[in-house]
Each structure stands twice: as structure tokens, then as C-alpha cells.
Image (tube, rainbow, N blue to C red; front, side, top):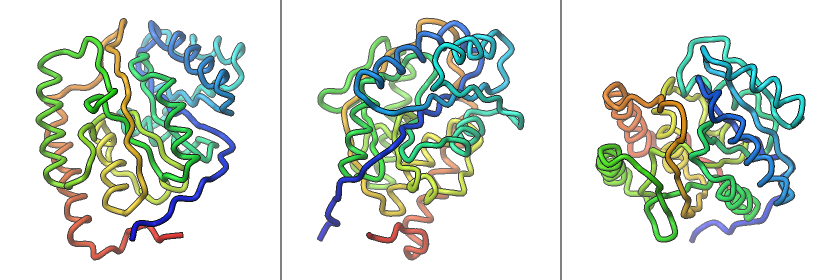
Length: 255
């Protein structure tokens, strides 16, 4: 019998946003997030991690922080990398609910509001999909789309879960769930796969909702597909072994 969900009270939504050379888009992104969450009555903080920017990203963040106090501008002082920047933000987030969003306005804050509501309903994590009924992509590059569908099909076959968009970073978790997924191993974009697959392998209760993704208007994507193939494969194999051979040692305890 499946475990009964119990609604929970949440006090603060932490939005962790890794940013590297995003001076052209970060202001619009943060203003939109703050407006959407404020309109929905969600107490929030915007935790932006500058991951070694060489442009004016941090200057923009300092200026915005004076105007919008919920913005927390941090600098990743260690090695750079998408995963490292996200973990730096997760380590410093104060919320009991956390979502990871991009600095380029590709993720919709309205979808993050849906995540918040699902977490309040009692789910431990919420995963969005751009490729289910109600989901949408805008200006998705064709080759990237083909590779995305192949990679997600492979992951779905390995883990036999119901999500067809595992590689997308935009997901939400309770802080307790993030703690249950530690230690986080992935220093790069493979963290986007590590977190949800650990949730599946460890028995966390999840919901899947349709989301919209819009291609960036300025700047360049930091994802380098050729560099990431072996890293994605490594983390998938690592968690496949955990799922089928760890004998439940790391699974979430009901209750």
C-alpha cells in the first residue's frame, strides 16, 4: 500500500540560481521571480551563486540586492562548475523548500509556484516535464532536443520511473529531502541527474507537473554536451547500482 500524503506547512522557499556571465539576463530573471512569488504570497529568498563570472554579473547583483532585499548574492570561492555552484547555494539556503532555477529566464516562476503547492501537499520533491501534456518548449534547438530525448529515454529505461525529463535542472525539494540525497557528488551539469535519481532510488515521494521552457534571449549556454556524456553516464551507473544492489540501506524511512 502506498504511503499516505500529509500536507505540511512551509515557511520559506529558497530559489538557488547558479550564474556565470549572466549580466545580460540576470536582472530580468530575478525581477520576474520576485514579482511572481510575491503575487502568490510565497515567502522566498533568491540565492544567486556567481560562479566565476568575468562580466558585470556581480555588480548587477549588488545593485539589485539593495533594491530587492530577498536577493542573496554569493560568490563561489572554490572550484567552478555548475554542480559546485548549486551545492554552494544549497549549503547556504535557509528555506525548508528549495528549487533550482536558471539565471537566463528559461524556467517559468509560475511553474515554481506549482512546485511550492505540491510540496505543501506532502510530496518530498516535484519534477517538471517539458514533454508531457501541458508542457511546452519555446525555441528549443533541434540537435539539443534530439540528444535530450535520447538521453532521457536511456535513463527512463534504466530506472523504470515515470519521468521523461530527468536531465532538466528545474525541480523542487524539501530541505529534508536534499539532506537525504547527500553527499552530492556531481561537480558539473550531471548534478541535474544525480538529485532526482537519488530521490527515485531512495524512495522519496514525488509529483510530476508540466512546465514551460524558453530558450535564452542573451548570453550563451554553459552546457557543453560533448564534455558531459561520460559524466552523465557515470552518475547514472552509480545510482543504478545503488537502486538495485544497496539493499535499501539509503532509502527514506517512512513517517
